[in-house]
Image (cartoon, rainbow, N blue to C red):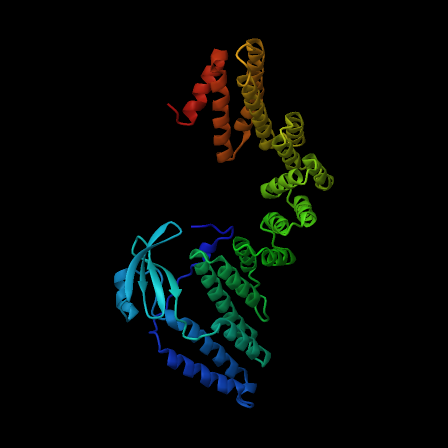
Length: 435
């Protein structure tokens, strides 16, 4: 299944409904009655009429799944459903197998564990957007004097329903519909007297719009994220640059990334997009380092800024400048393990590049080959102090394992250069569970 950056699994809230499904005719009659009351000059002046109308629309929305409870097994569902499936077949959704049962108003999907995992309404009891109608009715009730907390609770329910429907659309691969529904969830959450703006819905509206290639819509909602102070740790700026580039707006893309880099200098997506952008427009990618200057002025003691600079030079294969930046990070903060790690990796990269150069030589240039091989060994030896320092000091379990793996590779390449290197290789091989 595809993965949305924000935890969409949270959307799959359990639908626990014990009421039996009503006829569509009865649902329509209830709505017509509630509408007549709300539109009555005298009765409609009271908030209660509009609260009842809102509930009538919600009842219509819920009716097709009124006898469906997510998470139950097939045997229990058969007892609760009140109807037998018209057809049953096996289908695949995003690489997972489901048993699909077709009912009168909905299709239900059971996972490989026999649990009801997905519900797809195929015949709504109300022909229009019942949730939108319900939201309008509740807002009118509030305007006519209903308590904010009562209306807010209903609006949050509507947001949740839109959100769940959007998640289902996403799961079934309809990204355009998912974006539409996420957008509706976002808009209702921003409607007074809603007490909570759903920034996740705003973000996911943009995210799914990108998947549907609706870049203008995505850009609109990503900008709304920024207006609301939601940046997803800087990733919104990278996403906005992608949308701008899709519209061939290079200047806007550069501006989004420059602003993002100021606030989130260690965001890898921003850095990657910046480097690729500068390469594509034939500008010097090294100018990206200049964009870090403002952040350095504001945070002169921030070692991570120099680590980021080192990464930029690393990607540009300017190894000497990268090493200088990593060493500056270690100088500013001797306890910053990433500076040591970055330097060690650079020496390893240099060794690999030189080795490739040596292997590309003609057979008769054996002297040059021997010279380059010596440089390879020297680079591996230079990597050792920085990597050993990182391994010794880091408390990050993942980084410790990664550093041990790189040390193992270094010592493996040096194992014939001395007994101490062979012993060190065996040490890290054992640490990593090798044979």
